[in-house]
Length: 115
Image (cartoon, rainbow, N blue to C red; front, side):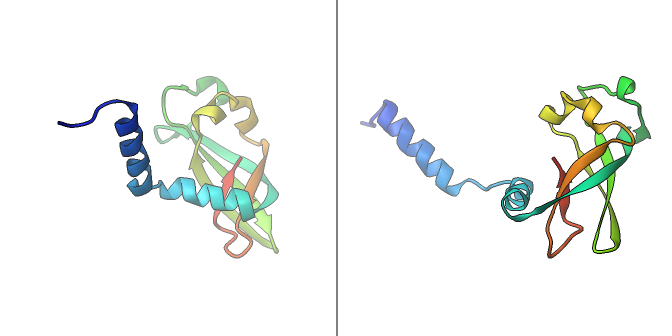
């Protein structure tokens, strides 16, 4: 006979959490959040489905990609990222030409994300 109930469920949940794979993007962001530096960046484009869109044209039900630029140590970097669900609720913060906070790795400055 197999045991049932919360003890068994709790055991398997704990076992699963020990062996589940973590998302590399989450790990990268956690590392940058803990050890990265913050610098000012600039939104240079906002796209959905491969075309530039204005804040009013953004469909919050579809992926939205921002392109941004920042400079450190006399080198300019450009990068992009998909906006998270919480970022989509603050679309006005990511308009074309907006200043944003960029968190980057001081040893590899091209590794960054917009907060």
